[in-house]
Image (cartoon, rainbow, N blue to C red; front, top):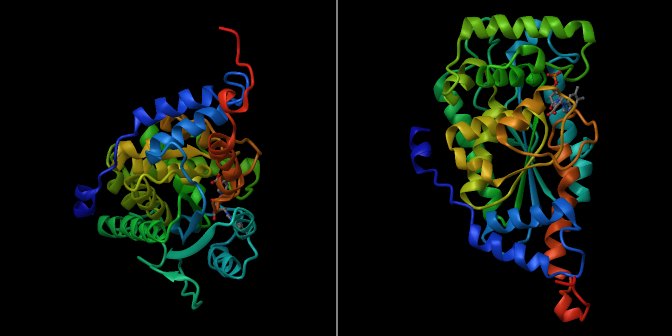
Length: 350
Ligand SMILES: Cc1cc2ncn([C@H]3O[C@H](COP(=O)(O)O)[C@@H](O)[C@H]3O)c2cc1C
Ligand SMILES: O=C(O)c1cccnc1
């Protein structure tokens, strides 16, 4: 990682093209500013890609799957085996992200970056760094080397997809227990009150939230991760899929590829990526606002405004995939609308 870290170069946004596109949008046949946030989005996409008429299609989705030792503490409503079972479901096309990826014509890769069991399926990308993290309430989740390795796996997978022609990257995850891991990371970095950062995840009973908060609080006291050190945080808390997503985000930004961020877990990965290289945030668009309360805190730390609020709380990249057609609308607006001049429509009186 030390190596990868040193070689990561994220280009600055192209402000000149952004200003040019803003001016062009003002010449399109509509009242000034009337397409609202779509206009700002089109400008952002132009700045990211350096292209006034960028393509966001085809989008690509990578789902990183990994297990979390913290499930031993009874912090999820579902058992750990569900992670591996859902990986099989992804490969059979039956999960939400399969359906939504298909609807936006996205290629979908499933990566085993740390599932606790072996899954012998041909379509699965097998990049297991270890068999799940250790229970971070009892011991460090993994070694710093493993955290680095997981970031590299994510980086390489994203780079591969980008080389294949993907124009917008959506990262998703599957890992029972990962809302606990994410809340712990958010608490370590933001130093906000734990009450603001812990939710029901897959649907634990409301009266179990306090227990989940206590586990996180006492684990953080024991692990004491350094708030400004992403590798220290990942190695002490986890998780492998969060590290993988962070690495993939860094690859996308390095290639001027827009990143459509999903919910709470994805935002945690975004935060880790930001700590590694702060300019990565320039290439992120927040697809939706998750029901998980910690998402609001992270959205603020990332300085973003979600496109959608559909009261979703799934992960897998699902909210980002559902928001993707908004990006398509933004680029089509610029590419296909007529200007006042070409359509011979009278413009606003000066
Ligand atoms: C069937 C099923 C499919 C899922 N797809 C995503 N998650 C989501 O729920 C998990 C996080 O919640 P917690 O921290 O409470 O375990 C992650 O795997 C996340 O991707 C799922 C969870 C389940 C049960
Ligand atoms: O917002 C998310 O990413 C999320 C919320 C609940 C469970 N799993 C993921």
